[in-house]
Each structure stands twice: as structure tokens, then as C-alpha cells.
Length: 204
Image 1 (spheres, rainbow, N blue to C red):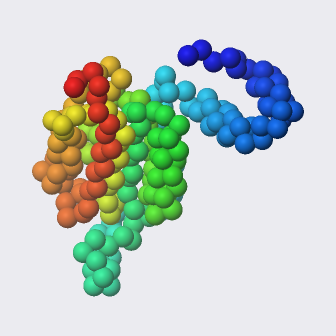
Image 2: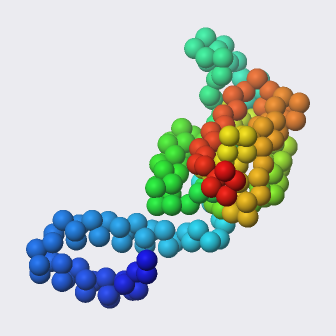
């Protein structure tokens, strides 16, 4: 279906017509949809991006390694004393208004939990592997308390996720990059992985 609204002036004209005919409810709904579209235009889903929201802090590896964590350990096996707590990767490979808003909410949540948040969109399988390989070897992880990875993508029952080019990767390929052998800096620390996948219609 082709949209009859091509720019802001035509949209305003339509709103005026609806207001004059008493369609206030429709106007309210259209206003919200237009606002959503304007927000999305600032991060065009045709192009990948990488945004970094740094919590800041002053992690000193030597200080953290020598800190007495007995008080923290009495409450939890996983003390959260680093600043930032660690990296949080949020990757959106299934871009809609709904998933855009969902990722913004998670960005705010994890930022408030003192994580450095890295947001990426429409990332190829090759670039996901490249990015995760790099961060899994990052010496900064030694001072971090946790690692978080979340992706919204297309997937299937074989535990594969897909990019826009329909290239696939096994979920375990990502998680195994952060096991104790491949990522010793995160040994005995929580590594959380969230895969939110919708059916991949082209591979049913």
C-alpha cells in the first residue's frame, strides 16, 4: 500500500481536515505514529550504527583485585563493585518501532545499573563475530564484574540467528567466545546472554 502522506505539510493538512470533522481520537493516534516515524528517521534502519553510552567511573585493575570483597561475598557470590560494572551489548537486527523502543528501555535500565552500554543495529554476522572476538580479549574485562549480550533478530529452531543478508550463526558460537577458556578475564563472573528471535520466514 502506498502512503498518501509524503511530507510534514501534507500531514498537517490531513490533521486539520480530521480536526474539522471531529476525528480527535484518530488525530491523537496519528500524532503518536508520526512522532515514532520521526524518531526512527534519526537512525535509518538501512544503515548499521554503533553508539556508546559510557557510565564512566575509575576502574583500577590493581585496586579491584586487592579489594577485600568479604562484605559483598556475604550477600552474593558475584560482587558488583566495579565502575562501570561491565559492558552491555544491545544489538537490534530486527528493526521496527517496537524493537527500537524496547532497546531504548533496556539501554536506560542497564545504564542505570552502571554498565557501559554499546548499541548496534543491523549488524552482519561477520561483524558480530568480529566485535565479540575483540571484546572477549579486551583486558578491561579483568576489572569488570559482569558481561551482558542481548540481540533481537530473526532465528530458527536450530538455535541460529540471521542477519539482513540471511547469513546465519549458531548461538553457541557467540556464547563460547566468553567461556573460561576463551575469555579468562571473565572467569567466575556472570555472563548473561539474551536472544530474542522471531521466525526466519525464508528458512522455514
